[in-house]
Structures are given as C-alpha cells and as structure tokens.
Length: 394
Image (cartoon, rainbow, N blue to C red):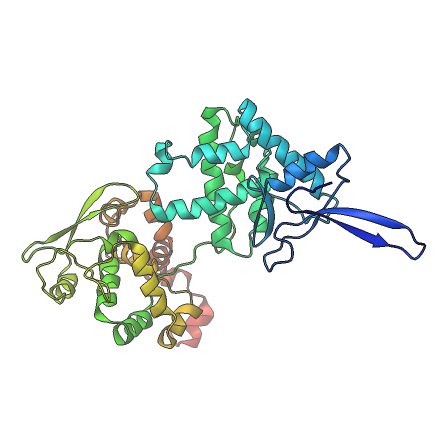
C-alpha cells in the first residue's frame, strides 16, 4: 500500500530470522534539513491517522518542535505523545468552541484590533511578541484562570540567567493577565505578587570616561545624537526623529512614540552649541546618518550604533555595559541634582513621577547621605567620643 507523504517504514532483521517493521514520520528525510524521526503506529491501526494528523500540524524552530505555538518534548520522550495530543485537542476546541486558553488570550491581546496593543511603540511590541511566544510555548493549552503565582514565579526564575529578559517576560505576563480579567479569561492577576529578578536594569548613567571615548572615537553625527539624548532625556527612537530648531528658537519639540504626547523642551545653552555645529543643508532633520540625510527608522541608527560599539575603542563600553539608554538616566540625575522637582523632570524627560523616582533613586540616596553628614558635622561636639578629643589635643 502507498504511504502518506513523509511516512516511511524500516524493517529490522533479527538473528532469529524474525522481522519487525517500524513506521516513522520524517519530514525532509535524507536532506540537511531533515526533522527528527517520530515513531508512528502501524498504518492499519486506528491511532495511525490521528497521530499522522498531529505530525502534519507540527512546526519546527531552532529549539525543537511546536504545535500551534506549544513547545513539545523531544519525539523520543515518553511525554511527547501525551503533550502533543493535549495540544491538538486544545487547538481543535479553540476553533470549534471558542476556548479561552492562553493561546487565545495572547492572540486576542496582540491583535491589531486591540487599541492597547496597536498603540504600543514598535520596540515594545517586539519585546512583548517574544514574551508572548514563550507564554504560548509553556502554557498554550492551559486556562489562564488556572495559573498560580507559584507557576508564574517558576517561569520567571527559569529565565533568571538573563534578568532583563525575565523581567520583560514578567511585565508582559502581568499586563496580559490584567487585560484578560475583564474579558473573561481569568478572575485575577496572580503575577502581581511575583518578584523581579535582581539586576534586570541593564543600563547605568554614563561616567565621564564614556563621554571622553565617544568624543575621541565617534564621528560627529553619532556624537550629536548622544548629546540630544543627554540634554533632553528622550528615548532613542524619539531622539532620532527630532527636527532641527530654527536659529533663535529656544525650545525643541519632541513627539513621543510611546505616549503619543508632544513635549517642548527648552534648549540648554551647551546643547545649542552642538546644534549649531550641525551642517546647514536647508533640511529640517537634526540627525543625519553616515550615508543618508536621515534615518528612516530607529533600527537603522541601532545597527550603526552597534557597529560603533563593537570597535576596539569601545571595548570598555561592552565590559561595563554602558548603553545608549543610560544617557536618559544621566538626564534625570542631572536635573534632580540641581534641585528640579520630580514633576519638572518628568515634564522635560516625558516620564511619570514614579519613573523619575525609579531612575533617580541613587540621587535621593546621595542627597540623604549629604544631609545626614551635614547634620553630623553641625552637632559633632555633642557626640564626639572623649578619646577622640584627647587624641587630637582638644
């Protein structure tokens, strides 16, 4: 009898003279792209057609096999068929009965018809897409209402070797569950009570040596972009899109991709000197690329910036994790250091008071320490141990 596509049979001859025939499903067999062979029942058995349908629904990536986004164990594992059958069952139910499992929740949340999703910045959506795929891989056929805080924390901890990824996963899962509550996917958000992975913030403010390296080794068009971020505190994508202010203008308007708000930032006198150095070509563009009059997308700048960071002169940047986004933190710290209120900082850097607190917590600690030491200095005579006075001859 003819066998379906990708199905083949192997006959094993034993010393006793007996023969055993095995049936396998191997997509792209005998090619460099061949999939792992999956054992099937005999074609005459009832289960054959059911399991063949599962095999035909499989997808494969660099990590292994998936079924409708659900990550499956290795084909030789005893758990492969139970997991695969559960995944195909969920897939069929989802289409037939509108089952509200995690796969359905992620699909609904990431739909272009969901205003919350469609209004997110492109960079945020890319990160959330990766987290959404991971959620489907882990829990695709599970009901969101069955997720516990312990389940969520275990998944977050499993990503602990890369804190930034783990915390982005946690942030997306929390938003996803919160969005699902009023839409009938679950009754509560158990992620609220989970913990972040320490060290998840990959950026630090730029130290002085970083600016010295940039000024010595980077071309001017890259320096001016960094200076725009330093003096305005805006996100990378918003900095790239800045328009050049006209001569005599003392503010620069920035349209934030993330919040869709426009902020008007007074131009610092030191920043004006950088702007005035930009070649005059009758263009409204402030930041030109190395080969183009402007960056069409922030991705073009990121590619060029990464090439710069990969140069030997910027080795210390890589070792100490100095990244472009750290300039935003510089801006917040500088404004707080000179006495600006959190609302004033937020108005310039286009961020909430809570985020200003988050970025500026080091400034708050330094300020508290200075105030504490001033108080100790002023009242030292009241607490100085007698032995100190005797030793100093006072």
